Length: 222
Image (cartoon, rainbow, N blue to C red; front, side, top):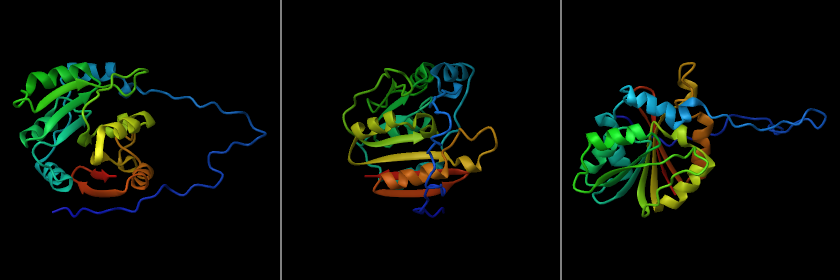
């Protein structure tokens, strides 16, 4: 069994002057670059070509159920659901699940593959990167899941949406890789240890645990 732990990760030490610029030096302009992996068109092309997200394992799902305290009837948003594999599992547990993705191709595939489980499962478009994103306005939910997707949606705008979506006492569940442990060229498929520390500071309760394939599970409350 994998023992869950609550890590005390904090941002790597930075100079007190970090982020300042020399008054005599040139003024810097902050430019935000959107990598192609963050565009719906890029993901549409992958899904149209048969791309599949690595499916969740039985152990991963067991930890999710145990640490979240899954109960039938709980309302869930699965953000970055892809073709809906984990969404369907959660609906089979009796949860009311809406899978969200910004790829129309992924949403279409999810709807084709997974029946609605008696009204417990549906899929919707959500693009956090758009200037005017299509934002679902669900009833408050008990759980927001970001499995291998948090690194692509993590932004101030998304955190505001989380605040609207989650009920008091609701849970944010993340499965991700740690950037520093990823091969060169794949660091964008994860979040940094610094970011894990920031999440620990921003939420009242955090539980983290390691999964196979260098994955980290994170459960956040409050």
